[in-house]
Amino acid sequence: MDYFTTTSAAATRTGGALVIGVYERGKLGTGAADVDKASGGALAKMLKGGDLCATLGRAIVLQNVPGVRAQRLVVAGLGKAGEFGVRQFRRATLAAMQALDEYRVRDLVSYLTLEDVAGASPYYLARYTVESIGDTLYRFNEMKSREKKGGLPLSKIGIAVASRGDGTRAMLGAQHADAIVSSMNLAKDFGNLPANVCTPAYLARAAQQLAKRHAKLQTQVLNEADMKKLGMHSLLSVSNGSVEPAKLIVMQYKGAAGKQPVALVGKGITFDAGGISLKPGPGMDEMKFDMCGAAAVIAAIATAAQLKLPINVVAIVPTCENLPSGTATRPGDIVKSMSGQTIEILNTDAEGRLILCDALTYARKFKPAAVIDVATLTGACVIALGHHLTGIMSNNDALAESIATAGITADDRGWRLPMADEYAQQLKSNFADFANVGGREGGAITAACFLGKFTEGLDWAHLDIAGTAWRSGSKKGSTGRPVPMLAEFLLARAGALP
Image (cartoon, rainbow, N blue to C red; front, side):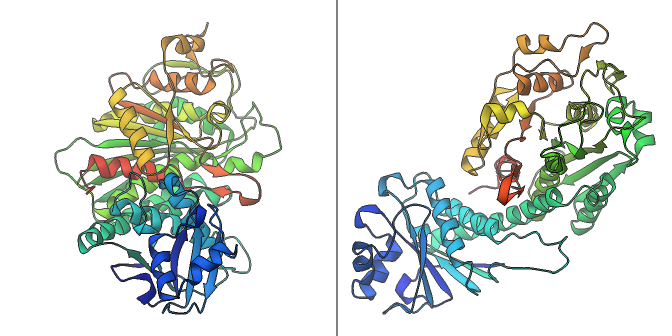
């Protein structure tokens, strides 16, 4: 995709399409006001007559508008002028792209970036624009027998700015967004692939291929024999029931000599049937998405590598399947983790924490400045936060705050949940150091407390993305979250933001 900025008035701009906006109560947006003047008041008349809708989330395409040089105008509803913030900006952009979907538009310019969006600079408005457009352009057709590309053949995106200085910042935002969109698409592809294709071995090969494309990115893959030597018996207990061997993928991006890295640990269960504690049948097909944490951290380190950020990042992905069989781990079995601590496995469907705990212990070898694990870990987090916010839990207030702030800024929000010893007490076991589950009450938090037993002395945060990693229903598919949140966190930490 090519990007450019323009200070041209909307009416004088040529191209396939211009995106402009109108507010409720008859107020025209900046681009719309210019078009209205050039067209002899046509837009104001249409708005007054009810031919244009100012409701947020609605958009209409107009062609051959008098006084306008562009082929098409996409008029998006912006809602109430005093309430036009980042989320409204993104909704309006998405609506405009959906309205354009049936047209063969190859280039467009958005004039929504000239609107007064609370708390957003030209850099972020450009980022939000490119990311929103990228989300609408994404298609997953890889497994279809007849290719159906669909969507816009868009190849060039313009960002309207008020000045050349704003243009410089907007171009940086577009370039950053391009890398984020590319990484989100990678994460979506991983999640959307079926489990018979996206196996642990497939993820490992994909990580190795990524390393070949970036000079400062390296990938190492540990096999089960390697993990056994390291004492990763907790991780290996999950793969016992599957013929697919487990892998430990270790990716290192070295962009800042001598600095401690940020370690990202992603849960990579490529299919989760629950093991012996078998899940109910309805919706089990969606358990292919149980590796979205792995997809997110691979995508995040790919973003750092593509943007050549001055930061060191390590991505660690424990990946395997969780299936029932005669060799599968049984409820009541006790295993020893890499840390030496023993775990009574009361429920084999609480397997994500069993692979993450050994990966978190392994992360210590890199002496990380911060560790963030990302996992579709608990249904309890979905009950607590729905499908809107990622759960954030941490032993470090500053780290938790920086992640939450990154989520707000990137419009990929999370919410911090508490961690306290009372929750950890629910993990007591009569037969081992602790159990892998602590009952239904506070399930997302007790899962984090379990992981916390392996992160003492580390600045650590846990992201539970069970509610945000994918959509169900007619729009079933991976969302690519929390890649924007992680990317914003890494950009801020690398000092790469304007």
